[in-house]
Image (cartoon, rainbow, N blue to C red; front, side, top):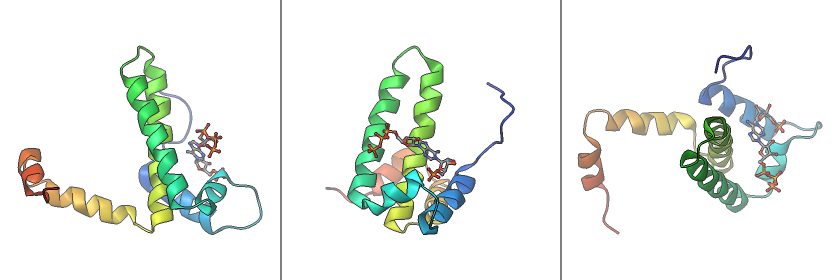
Length: 111
Ligand SMILES: N=c1c2ncn([C@@H]3O[C@H](COP(=O)(O)OP(=O)(O)OP(=O)(O)O)[C@@H](O)[C@H]3O)c2ncn1[C@@H]1O[C@H](COP(=O)(O)O)[C@@H](O)[C@H]1O
């Protein structure tokens, strides 16, 4: 899988997306998508999630990687559009590291 390209983390992507969202001038898919609103960003995230799930049960491993990259990009775009810092998500993940997933699930509000 090793290719001679830069390794980009979620933090890197969030910084790129934030710059694109606030930038002016050159064409940007990110800015166009965010300008269409949170609901559109959420719809795109849902589509990419389904495409990732479908790829995961298929046989093409490269498609799983590609769809996952699309999914993570659209998640970062949605968080930007919704004004939620990735840092808040990291903190929430951190709070969960001291208990099991079953405990965390039991602690969620019923609904
Ligand atoms: N990682 C991504 C990335 N992953 C996916 N995509 C785009 O997401 C879109 C998803 O494809 P679809 O076919 O579902 O969408 P579509 O039909 O073209 O568009 P819609 O009308 O449905 O919105 C494609 O246009 C992809 O190019 C991305 N666009 C941008 N990035 C990153 O964001 C940076 C900034 O991009 P711009 O904002 O375009 O400058 C890039 O350098 C990348 O690092």
